[in-house]
Length: 455
Image: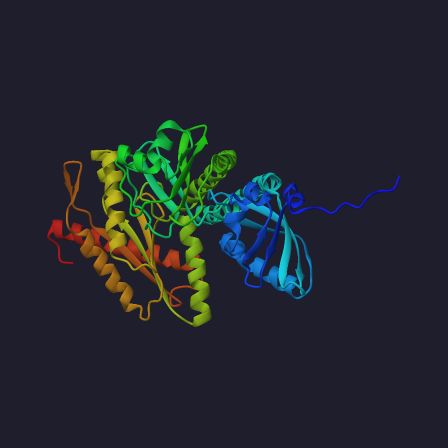
């Protein structure tokens, strides 16, 4: 039987599942098949005259420009992928095959919607990336930056924040906050914020233009700028809700969907685990380097900083000084008034010491009532003696501790590099000995005065 040729009509193209487009030199749509409404949300009539490039997600525009150049240079593009903002504000992932018609001066392209496939691929990649970020991030801020980039592969995140919630203090802080219209909020109570409902109920919250204004009014939320959409997902752990992941868009931007909410919720548990792990590492590192009572650097951190300072001083032929400080009669405070008063006294001494120093200096607690101060970038050794006098003056006013008035006198020994040693052990030993000489001299003077003998 002879096969009769079939000449398709224009309606034949409209039966295709993929969308067919013809675009002129300026990127303006000259023809769009019926499938474009399913993929982009616009009817073919609405597409006519529209510039396709304006619909491309901003992050994909440069790649798209390069692809268009290749097509118009006579190099057909097969399986090129980019993202578009649909009429309803949601994101569509598109795979294009396109070529240029020199005769008609148009680009002819076929667009296939691959949103579901790309989301599935992205989810697998995101879960792996979060695990890798949790293992490699040096600190919480780096982890937050990595999480922002990772989530950005799932949905637009131009305005993104990590809010952490402390249940004990009922305080919400924003250690990571990227927003084009709103400054970073200061720590506050959750009440009166959009995060409050997420923390209270432990459930995701998607606010769209239809629901946002009503929610803001009911909850009496104060906003620097009204978003178009607000999406918040709780960060949950075995302790409960430890924070909220926040994505926002502003008028003219994309609209978040229930599918976006589900995606963010899907990865939130792993993100919460990564944050808790990093917080634990930060706490362990802090405990290893800082004194738990005064929050000053401990002996180990002092040694690290002293080693670095000595390397710099040797390289630049500079100077540095160490002050070794001990509180006279501190044991008497502990024995007569109790360790609680002694601890409060040490905390107040630490506070006054920090006020005497520059940012480049270090004050560390190295023993019960012993402190060491590292003075870097000291041009002349005499300046260390001036700092010591400043410290004596700062510690001279009485300490009002737990209804007690205490007068504390410090003994301070000073060591200079390179005059009194070439390494940290020699310098610390010299400063320690100088401190004991001062203490012994003061005790002997006091005893001599009590006996009425000439000094």
